[in-house]
Each structure stands twice: as C-alpha cells, then as structure tokens.
Image (cartoon, rainbow, N blue to C red; front, side, top):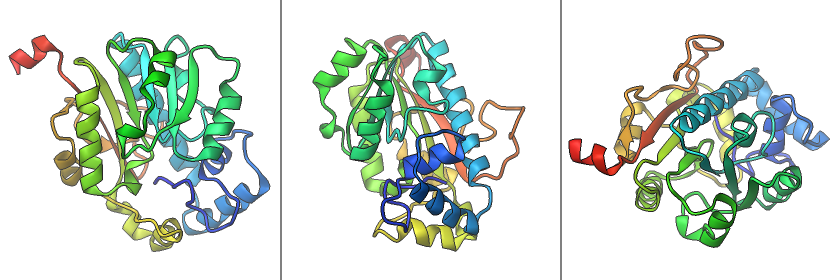
Amino acid sequence: MSTSASGSQLAGANSARMIDYWLGGRHYLPVDVDAAKEFEAAYGDFRGMFRVLRRFIGRATRSIRAQGIDQLIVFGAGLPTSGNVHEVVPDARVLYTDMDPTNISMGREILADLPNADYIYCDASDLTTLDQASVERVLGPIRRLGIVFVGVAAFISDDKLKAAFASLYDWAPPGSTMALDFDSEMGLQYPKIVEMLEAPGLKFHMRSPEAIRALLGPWRLTDDGITPVSAWRNQGEDADYPAFMYGCMVHRPDDEEGRRG
C-alpha cells in the first residue's frame, strides 16, 4: 500500500522518509518514526510490505536492464536509497522525479557524487511538467526507455492515470518498457489506513486487475500478466505475501514487433 507525500497525520512527517525507516535506511527523523508507528497500529507489517515492494522494483529494474535498456526514469521516486533503482542497475543512467520538494532536495544530496543519476521535479500525472532538457542532460538522447511508475497510481484518478499512460506511450520510443504497481482492494480490510491516507484531502484509489487492465491503453502487457507484486517473477522469498499491491510490466512494441502484432 502506497503512502502519499503528505500521507501522515503528523505535521512534518514525510512518507519517503517513513519508507526509508521501514526499509532499514537512515534518512528519517523522529517525527517520521512517530508517523510510521501510527500506520503500524492499523497494520503491523508496513516494514514487510515496503520491503516486498522494493524487491519488486529490483526485479523489474533488472528485467528492464536485461533487455539492453540503460536509460531509466522513475516517477514518484521517494528517496533514492535502500535498494532503489540506481543501486540495482549501477551501470545505467537514472533520472528520479517527484513533486515533493523535500524528496527532491534530499535526493539530490544523496546522488550528488553520482554522475549517472539525478533528481528533478515532475508531477507523475502530467508529463508536461517534466523538463525535457533535464531528461536529455541526465539520460542522453533517448533510444529505448525504462520507466518505473511505482507508488504513485493510488493517488491519481482513473481518467488522469489513463491519460498519463497514453502520454508516456507517445513520448517513449518504440522498444521502451514500463514497470507499474497499483494498490489492491485489500486496503478495504483496513479502513483506518485508508482514513489516514485520505486525511490531507486526498483520494486513495484501490483497483482490481480488471480495472488496471482498462487503464493501460496501447501499452502491451507482458505474459506475466497482473499479479501481486510479491509474486511477480518471484518464486522465492515473500512470494506469498498478502496482495496489498498488484504489479505488472508493459512495453511499447518496436517496429518489427508492431508489424507482427
């Protein structure tokens, strides 16, 4: 289950730092721990939940890199630490984006000594907010793109999310691949969590696989389908973790594949 940038009821807490706390990192403050414990009172294993999600990001990112894609952009990135994308594929160029100024500032500090990674502003629901000059500066001329869109869909309405995916499809070159996650309807079993997430005036969107499929537009779903993130290309650790989030991978066909399909 995702948390928004303002998803805590405690003033001053930051969800990216809360997640870093749950992942065993060190980029958090006492107020973030207090907020994390509020959420844990409603569901005791947020630590396990976000470790499962971070492992999904790792498997998906390695899969993208194995396709020969070495340019990756991450939307709603949170903090670039604790096994985030550039740590999983250190030989790739990685651009993190977020709309939270605290995450961007901390992210830039963390990445300051890494020439192949950077962090900039972007509203994941509106691709026009992405500075294309910064994209080319960090990633170079785009050939095929790896897109990581994880942890943000729960706070974007269906119509805006479908439009965002369509914009990404039009922007990404043929042969590009995108990894996605969506919060499942399992959250309905924990109404206190939903209440806390929606407290700042947000709407928390929970979706079934059928609802997710309808949002993908022209993107082609891989043969893995839409599965719990714990089970996606995983037969080992945590493969049977409760299905709080669904994950999938989609791609934009290259010219030859498009002619076949």
